[in-house]
Image (cartoon, rainbow, N blue to C red; front, side, top):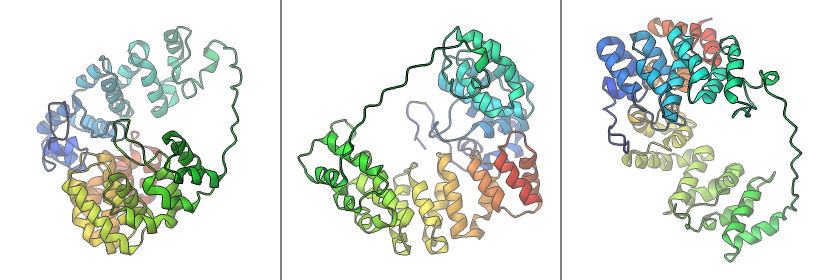
Amino acid sequence: MTDTEGTGWSYSPPGTLLGALERGRGLGWAYAMADREAGVAAVLDCLRRDTRWDWGVDERGDYHAYLIRELGVPIDPLLELLDGPGEEGSERAREALAPLALLGSESAREALRRHVREGEWWQETLSFLADNWPAHWWEDLGPDAVRRLGGERPAHWRSEPWLSWRELLPAREAAPPARRELRITPRTDRLLAALADPDTPYRERDEAVRILAERPAVPVELLTLVPELTTDGRDGFGVRGLGGVGRAVRRLGPLAVGPAREWAVDGRHWLQWLGVRVLAEYGGVGDVPRLVAELANQWEERTWCGPKTVADGLARFGPVAAEAAPLLRRFWQLTPHSYERPSYLKALHAIDPGAAAPLLGESLWDCERDARLYAVRHVPLDGRLAVRLAELRDSPGEYDELREVAAGRLG
């Protein structure tokens, strides 16, 4: 796969050690444990670059931390990233080092504490540690943090640890209350009339849609206007729906299903996708073929962002959506966008529980916490899987809800 641009690498095949690790799959964990020397080399390769499809939502930190601990992988590449000049690299390093510290690595713990005292990205690191570490691991860093501020206000002063350290900060004069300019909101009928008038300026139409989208009751009359509620395309991103259209339509829920069936086969991509989203959330059994066709089209085009929405919709129909199962399994195996993988797992489990059983087992080692949590709720309690549940229950690196669910399953 050559999905990455300007990085000098492409994803390895998903059935290989490196390809599975790059995607954060449990299969990568299994391969690495089976050949530990190759596993160490592959993990080091993944630590040196960002293998996430979308760094904003795809998870890797916990996954890498567990692998580092189990394989005894040197953490030098992460330490170099942590203290390096790149903010994204430093962020990626702390996301792996913080759980690694919880798993018992003193080197990881001290490196992060030192970065707070001396490093470039110290405020972001401090906020991350306050969110993920017990308080007694970071509360003594207060004097060093205040010293580094040099009298300036903290970047994240409304959150921890600064809420706990308010007495350490110099007193500031209270800011005068902001003056709010009151605006008389137009009546709904006037807004609809403005939207129906093709001569209404673009910005006024955009504002009208946004106001209607926030009304306690979105007027159903808006649905007939939706196909024409578009941008003017002058921003360089092409013609698409106005900002509030999607929110307004989805708030109408089942009332939008009828028009959505027409939109879903429209030639305009933005309108077609809006129709598909409505059908996925509120459509009936008769809409399953259209959703399956959309999923097939996304597979042909290797669309990694979006199949999650269709998968969540198909999961509502269970075995009735059996035709989608092969496509969902392909997405689950191949996608580099790990954030979407839990949705494929849930849909497959709803459609064909027997066929999904091996995927549930693998997902106990997945990089995505939602995948692990779903697997913890549904895997059979036998042999190796029960042992894994006990590991998750007792792991200081796991988040509380997952540990509680694992404890409940194990009694």
